[in-house]
Length: 338
Image (cartoon, rainbow, N blue to C red; front, side, top):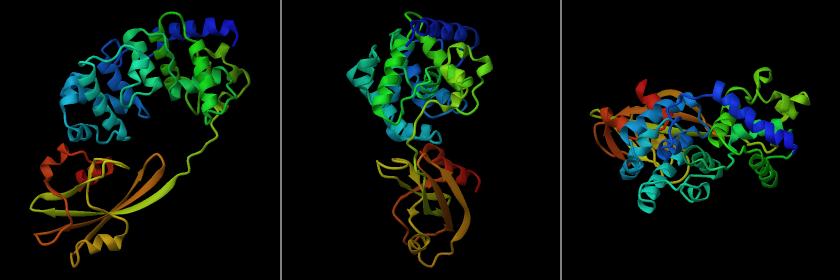
């Protein structure tokens, strides 16, 4: 890597971030590791606009990491409901408990130590360490991979762990000697607002003169990642039972999709759903289509009012208390609209 690129890249990103980057988000302008960590976890694979409301509600309810650690997992999942990727919420709770019990309520101050906590990977640990403790350490989240992949015209296939390791080495080599926190934020901002996945705005990009991908005429070729996820399709039937203003819920297993969340009783096919309440008059509701990372989920719903008798196992919950339960987003929408 040319020395000129190493010298100029960091200075350019820092100067651009200071003038044009995002500097007023609620988790910025603080060195409170709890607030930075919370935002970093929420922002994984989630847009800033979506995170804002969740972030404020979490802090209002649990202003310190020890408050979050003292909460129950069900409470945390209920607050997280609708944000998706629920393993993040379970790791969030486990991490808060580890910080409270193992570190006296204070986050470790180095990226290496932060990586020992549940749910904190190398890039997240580096972001916290850079923003809160000024550690000179590189991050490599999706936005940064895109920016560096294009600037360097990085030919390695990031489906390969060896290629990703080389890009980590490049990311470390490009670190400026000072202002690492602003540099780190600048890379995030560039990837989110200028060097976007499909339509990079090269005309206003501050590192355009240094970008080899742009010089080659096709920056969107980078980063290279050949492995494609094969999307699947899943189909299930919900049984929506109501009794005297209560709805029957079941809690999902501790592992798998929607782990630990509460849903209506779910069945693999319509016959099984109907057999769970033989002889009942079941209303067929419009089907729902829900897209997850690896598959598209078609959810059918059969609804009935019951007055007793044999029903599937579960917990009867008053409709007015449903917001206190961790419900997946499509079920929340179904209930709110029905």
